[in-house]
Every structure is written in structure tokens, then in C-alpha cells.
Length: 433
Ligand code: JFZ
Image (cartoon, rainbow, N blue to C red):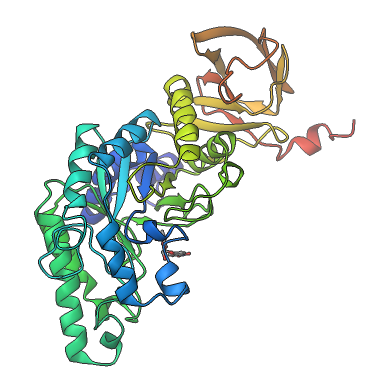
């Protein structure tokens, strides 16, 4: 026979065999995609300075002075539990904690370093406290680990001196082995800043990640260790990775990862966070939103207030965010106030501005089966009329039913994939007629 039939060809493409590596990745990433929203925590000695986590470097603070801060680092007991409870209340499903940032201060009882929270001031293993608290609240557990170490004597020398490189890699690999061995199941390893070595080979990343995966078979690893691994990490920006590639936007609340006592107005507000969550979900990404706890471990009140409101909202409207949200495409925003997420044949219209008692969405395609308004009291069926021009829905209340953040959701269930795109419509009926 000659050419395959078109239909067969389409089917063949759909069932395209994934390689074992691709299949394993898809499996281990499922919970992560469905979780969507996580809490990033930057906390360490720099929190005591309160001027961004790079203070020691940017202000050229002498190391003796910096590590002397450890003597006054006396966080309250149970602070990690506070973070985990807050994450849960915020509707976040996983957490990522800075085990060691660039300053070289390890927040656990590391045997390969003298600069640890166990050997110095606090005398505590914060990683152990964090992991226990996260688990207790049903959170997936992520560990952030900085490859760069400003303080380690070989942290820079490793670039030109092979013996120094050997010592430094032994240290990095030793620390990772501890983190992957001593705290039970770890769900995410979040590498950061692979400086100064030039490539994955110089860092021995393949060997290191093989060790990590051997110790933690289900673990998800980000892309900041100079290998692509499981997901891409745009920062302070929402930028989808190419189709088929997982991505996660990491974002500060107020411009600093480490604790800074900035005014309330400097915090991204709850409405904006929701807008970003929608944009990210539409692009098939995840959202890792940072808090920088104060030296005593407490979370700055502006962050607590916002996270609490977001969590309250997600309790009602979470189905538009969690679970098998499809990567978007084909659902264009309506002016500047209706945006979308989609799960299979169901479109969720996110209303940032309330249209009044009737809502009209032009250019909507898809066989509409049911339309409902999601409200704090549950879903309310809406009437609808759908023709070639538009989908009309009514009766809506006069104002947004969400009094918390003022963000409403209309759920549109269809028998086929919903689409809203103006392509082709210009020809059918020009906008100016
Ligand atoms: C790094 C750190 O330097 C910073 O302190 C914080 O921990 C943050 C999460 O990560 O900063 C970066 C790293 C990578 C990029 C930008 C800032 N990047 O790829 O654009």
C-alpha cells in the first residue's frame, strides 16, 4: 500500500510512543502540574539584616560580622509550622525552602560544613523542622539548594584549581547526599545559580543527579543545575516554555526574596496574584510565590493577609486552577476583563470586571451544554443563547458575587473544545460594521 490514510496518520501521531525517559517524567510530574500553586520560602542569616538576601555580597559585609549574626538568630519554636499552615490556608500544595543560599550558611545539621544552623547560634536543624511541618499539613516538600557558595574557600577557586574543584564538589555532593538521605521523602530539588563552573560536566551534574534520583526515585529537579531535567524556571516573569516542557514562574511578593520590611503598598495585591495565577494556569505552568519570613520566623503581615484572601478565594473557585488544566491556546481574552482557563471541554471565564446582569462573549465556538456561575454558595445555572456571533448568558447578579477579591468565575461546559478566536471573523463581519 502507498500512503497511509489521513485518519490513520492522525491516530498514529496521537499515540506517538513516548520514550521511557519521557514517560517517567510525565508520571512523576502529574501531581506537580495538578498542584499548580506553591510557596517559596527564603530564610537564613540574611533575614536578620532585612535588606534582601544578597546583602552580605552587595554591601561587602565582612564574614566575621555576617556569621556573628548567628548568635542572635533565635527564631520562635514552631515557625515552620506557621508557614506550612499558611501555605495550606492559601491553597498552595507544595513548598520549597532555602536549605543553603549563596551565603554558605546551611540551615541543617550538615556534617561537611562548620557554618550551619545546628553548630552555630540557633542550634537547630531547620530543614528537619520544615520537612516535618510541611508533611503534617499535607504539603509536597521541595528543597532549594544554591550551587554557588560565596563563603566556601573553594567556591571561587574551584574554577582554576583542580584540587579546589574536587574539594568543592565533594562538599556540594556531600550536602546533597545528606539532604536526600536524612529527611524522608523529598519531592522537589530546586537548584540555583551554578556559578562559577562553566558547564554541567565541570559540575559533575549528571553524576550528582543520578545520585539524587537513586536516593529519591520520585523527585522532580529544576533546570538551574545546568541540565534541563524536569522543568524550566522563569523568574519574576510569566513566560511559557515551549509546548511539552514544564515550567514554573517563581515570584517575589515585594521585590525581595529574603525578608524586607517593605510597606504594604509594595506587595503585589491579591487581585494581581490571582491574575498571574490565571495567566500561568492558562499557559500550563506553575506558580511558586515567595515569602521572606522575619528573623523570628514570622511571616510579614502583608503576605499573610494576601495569602489568606487568596486561599479563601481558591476554596470556592479552585476548580478553575487545580487539576488537569490544559495548556491554553484558542481562548482569547475579552477586552481586558475576561480571561480563561480550560479543562478539556470546559472553559472557565475569569471575570476581573463585572459586566452587569448579562454577559456576552463574541466569537465563542464549541457546543455549549451548560453554563453556571460559581458563587460562594455553590454553582448557579445560567440561561444562555449561543449563535454564530456570540454566547450570551444571564441572569447574573448586578455585582460580582465574590466580595473577597472581586474576581468571578463563569463555567461553560461544552460538548466539544471551546474556542474563542477572532481569526477568520474579520472576513465574516468586520468589527466596524
Ligand atoms: C537567584 C538568587 O540569586 C536569588 O537570591 C534568589 O534565590 C532567586 C530565587 O534565585 O537569582 C536569580 C537566579 C536566576 C535568574 C534570576 C535571578 N534568572 O535565571 O533570571
